[in-house]
Length: 228
Image 1 (cartoon, rainbow, N blue to C red):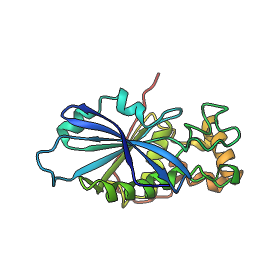
Image 2 (cartoon, rainbow, N blue to C red; image 1 turned 30 degrees about the vertical axis):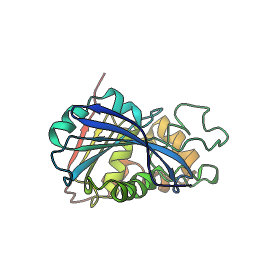
Image 3 (cartoon, rainbow, N blue to C red; image 1 turned 135 degrees about the vertical axis):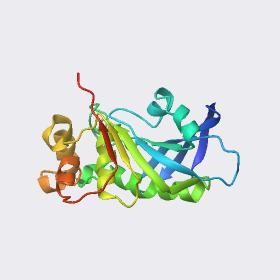
Image 4 (cartoon, rainbow, N blue to C red; image 1 turned 90 degrees about the vertical axis):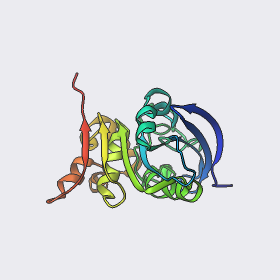
């Protein structure tokens, strides 16, 4: 199967374009969609910095692009938005669609260790495969100037990915993130099924545990947690 991205839709917005692409992911073993917002440019040689957006439970690559209106600011600031999907799809693993908070639409941005869920490797997809795919196929994107953001499960993913890859991202912003999944039902369910019972494996995908290991951290982190 061809891993080169194919454009499946395009729409104009705030002077730029939302473009949705499909490709085969060797990391996940299935076809995946992602969406890019390209801001307007006066020069074909101009390269845009990128902001990766990781969505929350049940979402696809389209939720943020359709609902957020972030393109208005991205257009004025000259930033490309990159929105990947939240999990592998179409693998027909038994139980993958039985609940809204696990399986399809709930990849938790980790690399699963349990054999049944071996294709759930969203951490490697977001950190390794997708940036390489973008740099090889979209010369107008400067993936060396990247930041990462997300909401809920995606906020968890953004924080953990940033903290484990400080050299790859300029900043992280997380909106209502799951910051301590080891101690909440969503995280415990996902981690048990994806990673197994070893709590040391869980700590590798828990932002609270990860940041506690730093003693002199210089980082650009924004967490917006709305109280109700």
